[in-house]
Structure formats: structure tokens, C-alpha cells
Image (cartoon, rainbow, N blue to C red; front, side, top):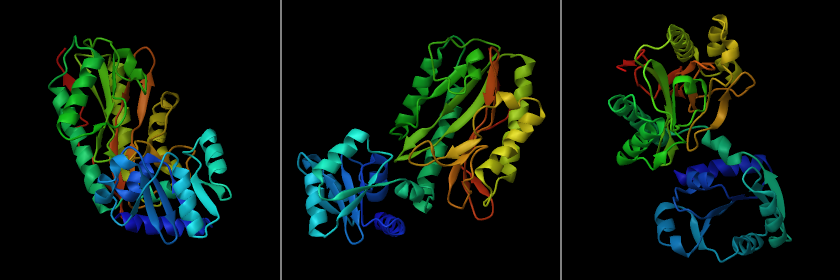
Length: 358
């Protein structure tokens, strides 16, 4: 699997006229090598593939990074990189400009002389957009765990609890069932806080007659899920039920009509046009969705400014919302895979308007 990814990277390197690529991103390192250690660098040339790491991982790295030459580096990894490049008669080195700070670039440029550094953007990330069968199996498991967590929390949550207590229970549940962690800081936003699209769990006490939005996911075997559901406790303001129905209509319409070949802008419009039709366009201020994978936000974007083209193998979210400051908000989100003929939905939690007793 890893060598296939390396070969695809080499093709991208050749198209960018890059003889060698220095990968510093921890996510991209794991994607290319399978190595899960906390420290390491990848050096790819058109003929060789190296994983450079330190003494701590010299047993682990060969077990995980199949097909790579494992090299133990000293205090300065650049000394080994320079040695390898000079021996291969390579004078230019591509580096991940989106990952390396200016201070890091300055140090690399000085330490690698006379090798010239060439800034490169997105070579590995563009490979990561398309998920293979093994990746999709892991992402389905991560989605299943998110669904299970939501089912569990519906039987746990009660008025009088704080959002933070609910968040912790969700975190514990996901970890007990195989997750490394949550995909991101869990959003548990109740009452008027549900009008905050990124209302990370707080010490607010959950009361009756209000909505609660849960936006969360499991990081499982290196891949993220991302699920949002909004429920009611007691009998909330009828306006909140109205916007719930509108958001659900917009989300279902998008799922029914999104397809390969569509741009992110066109996919976004599927949801946005419905919400706008009901007069709530100004209350839907974020994009309809985003790519999902080893990071919770990847390419492509489903937004009104996105010309990204949806293609088979991409995994994206579909998550329209309406937010009424001072009253509450609704968001509903699923994870989907773009296929040759349409989509496959990974998340399956009920979207019926769920009302728990106050």
C-alpha cells in the first residue's frame, strides 16, 4: 500500500519538476509510510524512499514502514538528508511549504547548503483526497463508532448535566471502543448556545425545552469521522422545530442530488438554495461541507466559493445549518463517499426529530 502511494507521489513530483521531496508533516508521513511514531521524516527521490527517525523507533519503524529504507538520524536530521542527496547527485529538494515555518525553512536552507530548497504545496494532500478500499473500511468503522456514540449518549444525557459532562462521556465511550481520541474538540451546544456553529462543550447546565447540537467524531486507526445531530429536550420554541425541518429538507435534498462531476459550489447550492428559499439564507454562514480523512478538514470544499470537482473516492461531509442568535440553532451532518454513480452514506444515525423528556 505505502509503495503504491510513493509511486503516485513520484509521478506528482515529476510533474512538478522535483527530484526529491522532504516530507515533514506527521499526517503525510503516516499516510506514505504507515509509521505511527511521533517523530520522523520522509525523503523520497525518484529511485529511493527513506524514513528517517531517531533511536527510539528503530525497532518499530521497520515493522510498519514496509518498503522504506529506515535511517537513524542524529541531532540534526538535515545532516543525514544532505548526505543522502549528495550521494545521489541531487541538488534540489522540495519541501512542504504549508508545514514548514519560516524559522524552519531558514534553518534547513542554511544546514543543507549547497542543496537548494524548492517550496512545494499539496503534493501529498492531493493524493490523500482519494481514498482506497482499505481507507474506506477504516472510515466506515470510524463512522460506525460515531453512530454508536450518539446512540449511547441519547440514553445518558439528562437535564441538570453540564455540556462538559456529556462531552466527557462521549470521549470515554469512543476511547473505550477503540478510538485514539475524538476527531476534534466535541461540540455539545445546548439552548441559546446551539446558535453557535462551533459551540465547544462548556459548563452550561442543560435545561428543559431547548435544543442540543452534538458535533463530534472518532479518530480511529488514523482516520476521522464527523457527525452532527440536533435533538430536543422537552418542548422547545416552535420556531426551532421549524428550522429543524428546513435544515433536514436541505440536507436530504443535497444527499439525494450530489454526484460526481459536480463542483463544490454546485453541491453547496443544493442545500443553500433551500435554506434561502425559506428566508434563512443569512442564518447559514458556513459551507455545506468539507473533505474528510486523516484530518477532519481536508480538500475538497463544498462552499459557495469552491471550484473543486467532486470525484469518485472522495469522502466529504454534508452539514447545512440554521442559527438564530439568542434562541438556538440546528445542524445535521453526515459523511459520504463519492462513487462513480452517486454516493455511499457512511453515517446512519436517525435524523427524525428526537425529543427527550425534560
